[in-house]
Image (tube, rainbow, N blue to C red; front, side, top):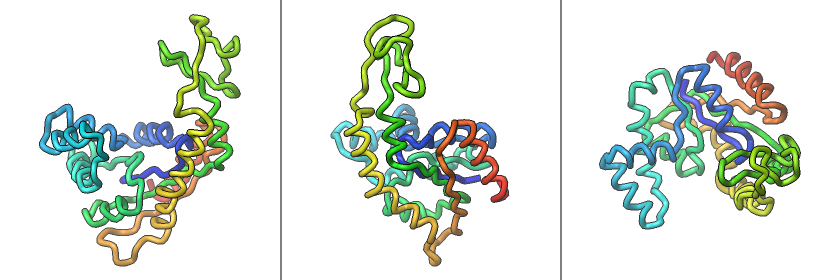
Length: 221
């Protein structure tokens, strides 16, 4: 199964992708993972990407596509893979088609914007250990103090409400159009149209995972 995850930051894509990868014995692939691996191996693509990143520039789509092609040609992708966080834009989606990289399923985790804000802006962390709490869902025993050390907890900049809302705006502007793109896949595309599946991200991690499992079964996976 070749699957792509879509959804707003905080919808739970990464967590659910881990479950799908485990249950189907396929790798979860992210652009970050691919870039780190290529740089670590010192491959020609990795060295090119490293130079671009060291200059503070974004890695261009054509280089990312080349990295995807190399990654999915590896033995662990023989039974399929999960693309997590790529493509993010319409040009990247078209580049996948132009490279004749086909997908079986595009799975969207759907969640209301305000629920995303509620989930993400409630996160607080213990900086030294990385322990994560949530003001509502997993609060510390003493407000804003780590349960183990008693040290102050902080809120990362990425988790502050204003930042979360900005990330949601970017998602709606750049990534949400992919939903319409994949639901109305170009008829003249070089690859077959993937099946599109929308899953509610509401509920516990286990409830969402069960919905995904049932939906994929219905699609034949």
